[in-house]
Length: 237
Ligand code: ATP
Image (cartoon, rainbow, N blue to C red; front, side, top):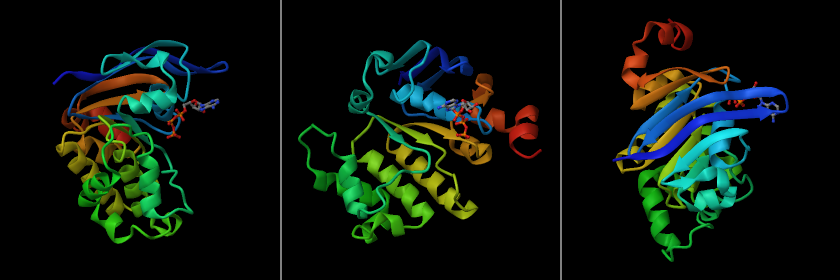
């Protein structure tokens, strides 16, 4: 096990707004690492810097030995880094199966899509029952499952998840987090960005707390969950 993703001294600006201020963090192979923080702390900006959607002013981002800052976004996916975007962004008018197919479009390993469906449906049986359903008619939780399934279709080495709990009831949040944990147990490395610090700290190995663009605290997830400051600010006392 080694470092799969490393972010060093990252600075991001939107015009004159200094959104990310010299942050550094790492994700080890096989781990779930979470980046928690309030609204506007810079979580999405950090993820977009990694996937190439935002251009940082300075810093280094290395994934499996490749310098991501020098690579175009569509090529970053090919390196094995798949993003599950905030708000899920599924294709609402397509069926579940067509959405999954879209996830496989970047594959060029000659493997069969059928095998991928089986792999995904095994992990997400609810999608199998609904493979012909129009995605826009799925429940919020099912749409989140579909977004995860779609990302898994490209056989990534690592999943970037942007607030998978958003807009879901506590019960569904629990279900989605169980799925993330299951996927991780099969060997998938995960970077999880979350406002729901409680749930994120429950499943993560390592955690970073982002506050107004800076990393305010970091540590083992269970240690942070018991930390007085974290409890007061993020876990409701
Ligand atoms: P949320 O949970 O609300 O998505 P976040 O932690 O993901 O919050 P970001 O979306 O990364 O936070 O935003 C970080 C800061 O950068 C905020 O102050 C935000 O207003 C600002 N910001 C984000 N995108 C832009 C943009 N395109 N132009 C200008 N400012 C932006």
